[in-house]
Length: 188
Image 1: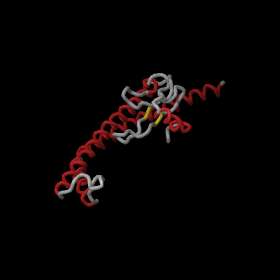
Image 2 (image 1 turned 45 degrees about the vertical axis):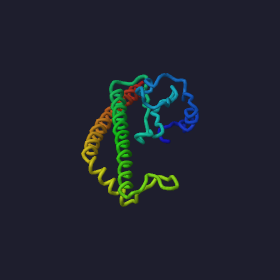
Image 3 (image 1 turned 180 degrees about the vertical axis):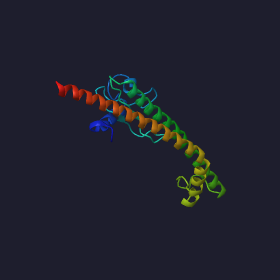
Image 4 (image 1 turned 135 degrees about the vertical axis):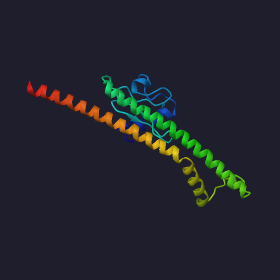
């Protein structure tokens, strides 16, 4: 997957499934990951962010951010803004998806009960509703959560504007540093 140098995630996955550590490297903190985050760890020599498999609750792919040893205060602010946004996003979508699933099950149960049907048919398969009936649920769920989604979108844009602004500042500082280095070395 993108963000996984040399397809390394595919090589790490079997080790993780067996319960073996991905690498006997330093703690997650050295890779910019807060405790309680994903259990996978990139090797210590990695110089890239690593993207893991989708989280089972939020369906978002967790990122372990690379922390350079010479990280400047501005670069740290950028990384921390990205980490904070990832955690915020993770929490929102885990809660939203759990709420969606619970309300969907309740809706299906109530509709089946109103029809005099059981949750499972005679073969043991879960009974389902047709697309038109489910459309009622989706419409109601979206209407009920409209304000919550509007707040999420507003906050998401604010966070991403901040991240983009910090990325621009970091890029400018790096470009100026490179130009000073080039001027110094060309002049020698």
